[in-house]
Amino acid sequence: MYEFLFKLNSNSHSRLKIVGDNINFKKEVAEERSDKHGHMVHCFGMLAIVQPSSFSEMSDESPNRPWQTTPAGFFMPSEEEYDIVVSEYAIIAARAAIRLVPSLGFLQVIDQPIICDHSPNIKNPVVPLPVFHKNEQQYKDVIDLLSWIQSFLVAVYGQANTPTPKVPVGGDQLTCERFRFAMLLRLGAVIANQ
Image (tube, rainbow, N blue to C red; front, side):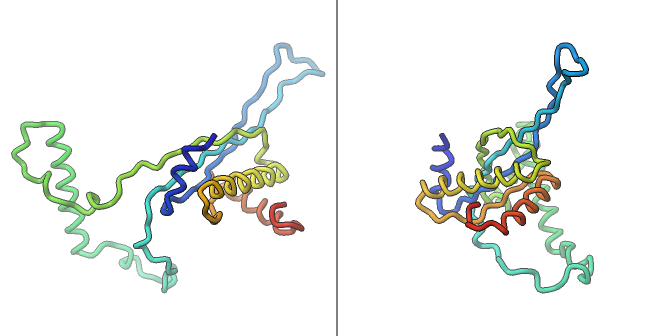
């Protein structure tokens, strides 16, 4: 069912992220009476985002200074970096102008390399996952979702013959908080996949 995901994930550089959110809608009744009412239906939908790029050149080290006491100028580009940004934006704008107005082809800026020419410009594949009839507001349902995600990841990485890494699961702020608290509830489980 997820052969595409298995194939993409066999690349040792690829990373997965699971993103989900609640789907709520009201199911109406034809004739509402005191004993027959419409009700809310709660579901949870998820996507797997495959990031095929590697960022191995970036450091894994934590910042060496607290950001609260760091002066704001530390985060601002230097004069040299600002000049690079301005010149590269000029090249990008000229490329766009040449595409829109071909008679501007005499501008020889298209051949000038810029930093983003060397960075991978790859769209991350998105794989839809099943929609579950689970209510994100109920922690027992969120724990069921976590169990499914865990078994799904074991299957995906098992098919690629690689160990299952930690995979971030996200969504909006409320979804992240509910998943974080459900993971804390699972810490008291007797066995690891409970």
